[in-house]
Amino acid sequence: MDTLIFGGLLATLVAMYRETSRMVVLGAWWAVLLAVTLLMAHHITGSLALTLSW
Image (spheres, rainbow, N blue to C red):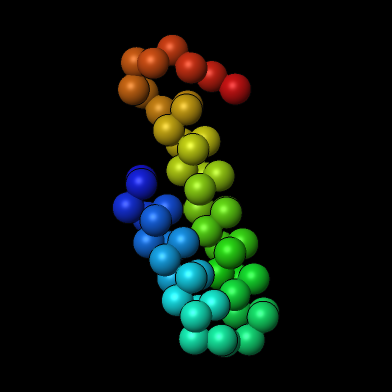
């Protein structure tokens, strides 16, 4: 999970460094945010025996 998050942030940083359009950077940022939210929801409600719930 951490690898996907850091990979997405790195891709966003590379897009900013290459000075791509603002829409591409914002799109990448929102995609990373959505992925983090979905992964955290899966992690919290998954069967990891952490007894966590929403």
